[in-house]
Length: 133
Image 1 (tube, helix red, strand yellow):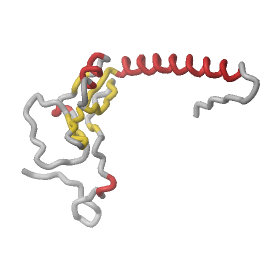
Image 2: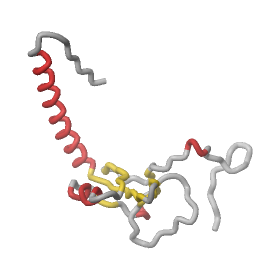
Image 3: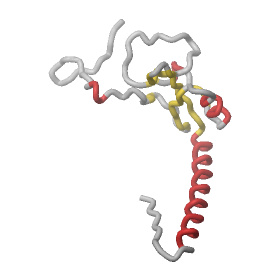
């Protein structure tokens, strides 16, 4: 098996310092989708599926940095160990649905801010400013 490791200018294999490892990155994302890594705790995977997310096949993406002996059977879902015996799975949702969900969340945030401002200005002291930087 031939490796295609990147070479540094000195000719040796380029190293990635331990402090710069990207354990939870996902490469090979398909355009038009938003990706997340979801811990497999309780019914979180099922909750995300109900919200329109789908599990991603291992063959379609690369999770984290290079790993040794990570052979997986055909049809395996992309996953990674996140510690404490917990596995996390790569899930994705259509970008359009993700943006709809974010807009709905923002409506709720705007309502809460409006109510908070109204309550703050009805008092006899203090001042409330909300800054969206």
